[in-house]
Image (cartoon, rainbow, N blue to C red; front, top):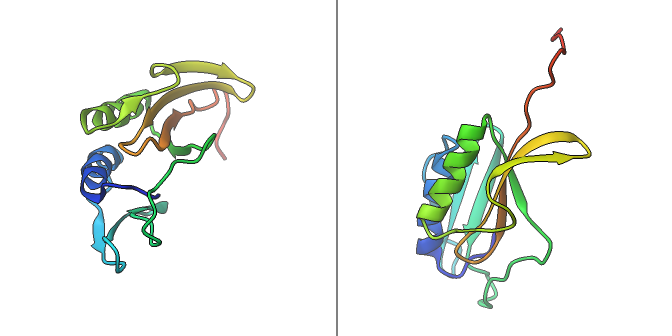
Length: 130
């Protein structure tokens, strides 16, 4: 994800992704201002200043969603983001009814206004695992 202030974004994402059990970002020099990678068993996420030197801009209509294990984890994710330079957007954290059933969502913007979503989908009741 493109960012303009690598240190402010590193602090934001270290705190935010720490709520998911991810370790602080690992620095990787890219010839301009460096970048940080966050890795987990299920994926990777990176932040960097644009290589072309132009300002980073957020995508209109785009959002990155992170799967949560509980509503408490989603709330902790959101709170860590707000405490570290993020801002709440869309609606406050809470349950939403949608075409795919009930979802617990939190939305926030990072210090560069990139939109992030924490999503918890409750398990289906009555399903028997095989």
